[in-house]
Image (cartoon, rainbow over all chains, first blue to last red; front, side, top):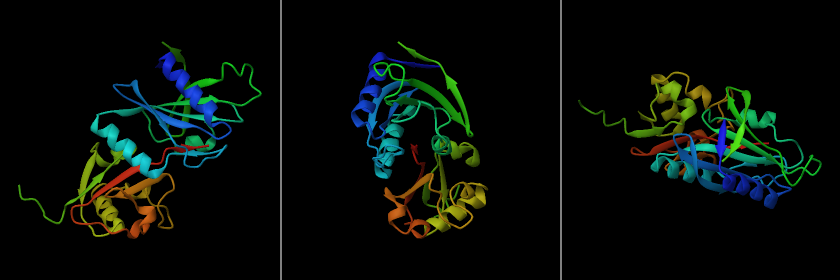
Length: 136
Length: 97
């Protein structure tokens, strides 16, 4: 299960809406599996169908987390025309077995665009396991 | 214990590849290019190189490798020069669709 504060939930949604129709992405770093430090990242691909952290941003991020003894607790991104479920590409790139992969959808044809689909997954060895999200 | 002075390149290994290094975050290696360093690492930690380099001898697109903070994609890829006291950092790309 992923426990996330209302604030972090809202920041992910706000970032996704702001970058729509391109995909938005970011990390919440923390220790012992607790999401603590919210880090919006630039989608270097600037694309409605792909996201990628810029390679030098990625290096800086990991050095920074390393020096603070943090891990990427949450790795989030948006889908802007499809549901909040990991794509085949998401699975092929997923390489943090301990991270919660959060997907938010900003597609217009969802049930209630005011409350966008917001879901979380573990992706380990190519296998997707959805987990409940508890907003605390 | 005597330190072999040619073994000075530090290679930082990401979580996902640590099963290949017995859990170590950093391993030491020698070599004056990235290719030589990865071959040296592979001699001690078999299988690591195959996770980074494809059958055609190119770096996998899923992985980013840096020599002293420079992305090797912009610096010769596997031919990137590595200094005696360089740090090689391996990071999986964070990307998707």
